[in-house]
Image (tube, rainbow, N blue to C red):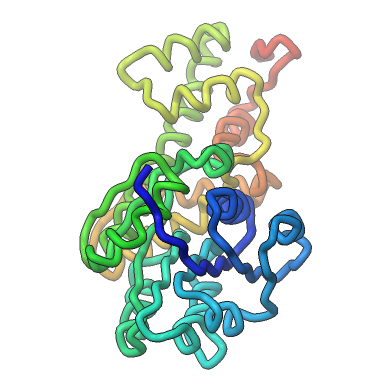
Length: 306
């Protein structure tokens, strides 16, 4: 790991991903202050010396490097722009790093305002699970001015183990959405294929083992294999969250006149999952949704009942 200087870090967003990421920066010896709408989520960080601020404005005034890891476009606009936002109140030449999954169009609004206020802005969305956030093994996709990226690089090293600089504009936003579209489509592809295999009375575990070892096998398929074997759809990323990301993808595609027929079709299936009460399950519960449409049920031994 590179030798790192001390940063006065402000962290906004202590959700499933944000909290362990902030904790890793704290464990590495950095003084951090935090803002989260639910203050109780900051308790474990406060016990180790973090300061809690009541508003993004207060946090920004007391930080030279501000990170955000929040839920959606409307939230980033709330915390970044306006009289009480980060950019209006951060010291000149401070750095604002947003690690959320948001649209390129919204990110460009943040970038334009940051430029006006002499705030250095990096887009740095991540790929990975909560476990990877805890283990500091996230994939970080960054874009913005390269010298700013190089300055923040030692902090990224604390948060992830695969770091990519991909351009000076919104490239990281586009790449993150590219990957999420393929991840979501993979879950729908797997759901349809597995339901098809069940119709042929294939042994469940054997089918999954062979598929994961075949040409279609991938880190994602192999990661989800045991979850599918156990049929445990406790969420690492929900169908509802995937629907939000697909909306970002399709809105961006519309802005750029890009046809995305597969993505459009799969987006409708997230509606089906949400409408049938599966919106807060893991997005790979798409399998269960397909089975319900097909009339496929299982015994405790995961055998099909026709």
